[in-house]
Amino acid sequence: MATVTVYSTPTCPFCDMAKDFLKEHKVEFQDFDVSTNQEKMQEMVNKSGQTAVPVLDIDGKIIIGFNEAAIKEALKL
Image (cartoon, rainbow, N blue to C red; front, top):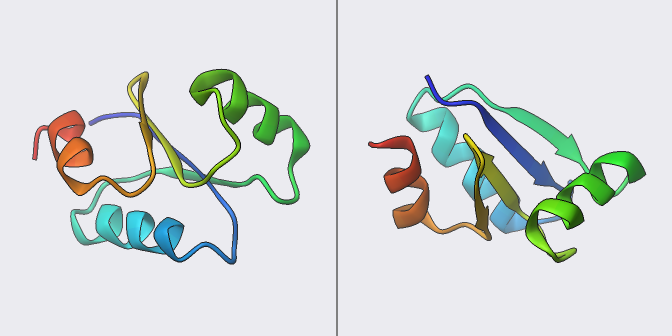
């Protein structure tokens, strides 16, 4: 099973779409609210080079935004 981290905010509809997609496919993930967690915000920026959410880290592959095709490819769905 892949190690999946989602960096998101509570007001981001694309974040919700990404997390719903993962749940539908029964993929376990850690979710960090970068609007309240500055340490995780900095971690996200270091990985992705930007502050836009969502950012997904799937086994080290960084996916910016809700890109269903890229998520499926990274998870081998």
